Length: 593
Image (cartoon, rainbow, N blue to C red; front, side, top):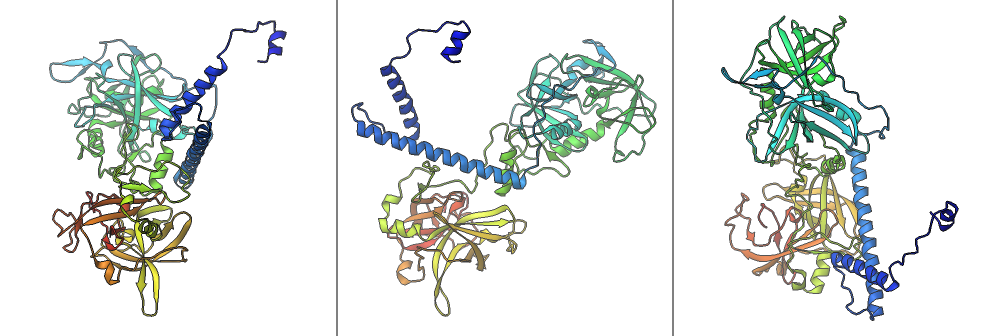
């Protein structure tokens, strides 16, 4: 609002004295210093050193410019991955019409319906039924019920619920570009907490909450056998009111409906059935649980029915999901069970697409929500990282922090930067492998030409590592801007080596002649070289060459060991002396070279 507008509105102007010019300058300096500390730029200690302050401001401007360029690079990479591997989400629909919860049956008061858990002991049914609601911001899109499951064998403190897969279908149908859908859980004590959709199949879905929430889990050992004509009672909980509801009905004779041969059906006596019943328990005449309600269907005879999964089938499904007794208590090597899917959590679609493009496995449920990290990946740096000239992003990925490059003569570092390349193999848009390679002089029949010495892991088959995947394409990168396709010329799977030729020549390279006599001389002190898979940054780790291969995990008697600590990106890179002579090619067994 301008001063003129303020006068016309009859208001008053605030004449309170503001911050002085000197104080504003101090505030700007303090803010700048805090930014410089985080960026690593040194700032002048004297306010009178105008030249130093000018230089510092220029460095700060360059730093911020580099950070912006890095953010744009990352956003562009994510956009490309989403375009190639993502689903086409629609724009968010803004509507004033929210999902309307409908009640069914009658309101159940605490203690009115009990559930037997043994011959002489019953518990309140109210403690067994929770409500689940799907939200987009504050707008409710869907609500149903759920049943707590036993805690099972897990490392984390988690509470899991089983519900109808209808919740997942609503989640997928309502997903939009904002990607901010969330699931809320209303507990029997009327408290709400966040829930995370995870595993699901065509019938059931699993929702998980962090912590032990004090709910009573269902007893999966107490099963009742449904019989046609039996009286039943279905229960569900409303989300907004938290009220427990129940309605009576009768079991129908099992009919062969399309894709529903494994399910039983029941019909309501009053036909006022609502979505709140889905995911809730179905009780028999003795109040033992017959199963879980899944969906409302119309068989065409003017009588709405509800399908349910019987307790014995529910137990089999949960065992197949590995919910109660997982085969593994950690996430390494996890694979989804057959015919089971996992929801991509809200806000993580770009992350999933990036993982797919890099050829990494999709993480198990809850890993992303609980800030899990990908281990042993190709982008992990090692040793001392050396950016190439003109590297535009200022900050470099962190390695181990050791000082290596200053141990090598400057001319050796220059030669290394002109002969060590980054390689990656692809199956379509999906990266299969990434490693390092060394440009070498290849002694052919007529004349020497340049090829790349690297690891045969670059072209091994994913399903069968004892064979070569000829469908893979190879890309070679030599910073700052030389890229070319590669052709596999020779490989030996026993020694895990490969020779790759370039489809177009690189300029200003310095290939190594590893076959000359002087290159065979070795010393105890060695340096392992690699190229970062993402930006092509040089990496170096120092160590000592050991005699023999004691402690090596690789099954090859000719492999020797050094104490250089590298990561996967260093596979195929050269091991050199401090005088730059070629000692060997690096392999990686998870611990070192």
